[in-house]
Image (cartoon, one colour):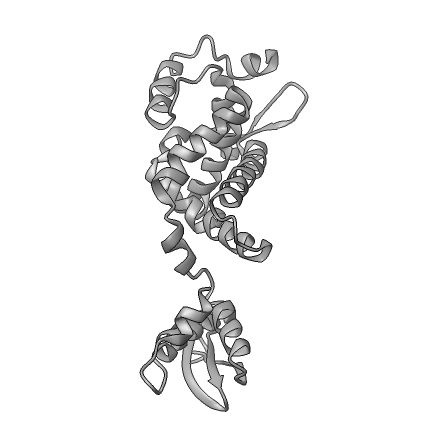
Length: 255
């Protein structure tokens, strides 16, 4: 703890009271040791180092927080879904701790303001809000222990943002969904990609989703992966009602 005080001069920094107040609007308790939170909201752009040359930024706490979040969410799902298989629990956990969801949680908390940098979120990286949320969890763990981190995760994520019924129906990847659906229903399918450049200036990919030798949909993007996802998403909405007017596919694939 000595070097944290040495690096940040926490006992002498006037901004500490401001950080304390801001944290108290986010956390369900009063933080004890601000040094952990100071590191959690130190961006590598500040180029801070300790006396041994170690870089000081939120990335190590981000690593720790990621592990704590996965653990807490795993236990939560294990208790709440007693009849779910290992595979089903893994899928549900992935829906909760995916990068997009963590980014949304960080954005809801307006967490980037604690960095104190005059940089746009885009300049700091598209995932900065989610990364800082994980770092904050890591800081809470060091400050309050496992139970404190669990309390924060429940208050900021589980209690207010997780509806298991809706979550079961949520689709993270339409491509994976369509592949699984086609295989379960014994249908031939393929994603056919080709270059689709605009007068040679920009390189785009066009991907057709072909089902039983019939083109169902297409997607176009500068990324082949994104084009596949677009084509799969469009196919998903096309195939939901089958020829008899049923919506059997959607029910089956969400089980």
